[in-house]
Image 1 (cartoon, helix red, strand yellow):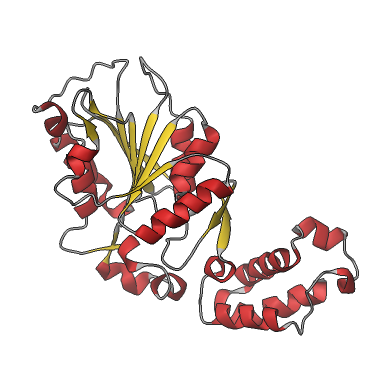
Image 2 (tube, helix red, strand yellow):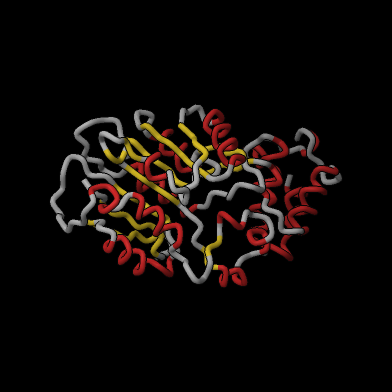
Length: 307
């Protein structure tokens, strides 16, 4: 196995660097053999006993060639392991990031004070369904809905829910449509959800020069980029749909907690945390908080909606 890992790593290190090339080599080995790294290192000392995996395997050569063209390994294998989930992916679906897993962790441990149960969740721009499915997996009692403008994303998200043995309601919807507000609210009880979460496109077009080719050339631009002229485009639309004005017809600065608090959570562009906080405040949100990711960058913003 050591010889095969060294072979793969040597073919990739000039592009990805030694550490990432080594990680990719083990990833490939685990995928092609259906064995864990521990099993490969200690359970199969003779590489001849490793199924369908030799240095001269054409499949291995193809994987290396595609990686050398910067194609993401998640798309090559058609799935990824993320936050304890096995998620199917296609090139039409954004690859889930570690930062989004941090968002899920925060949401999973959030203390909802509700007079009625269960917690009702709406995930906007669900993509692979990763956020919605992860929340449902951790809280089976929650009622979780995911929406997306892409029919392919909805299809993949539904398959991912089945793949991970959870039931999530996925719907095709455009948040910029004129009817979306009515669809997300109940005529009798107002907002149908206790938690609205979104990881919308937030990378400015001008930042493309900073992107790695495996992202820029392969992942869906519509799920990544916003125009420099309006970097808060998606945030503003979503926040407006659930603002105090939209739900109650008036703004309020009342900070008193209630048993029916409803919350909005965003994953954000670190460059716009101050602007986003001001925007939410202007729309009547209260108890606005910004949370840093593991690298110390502002990555999550939350606010309390109208009551």
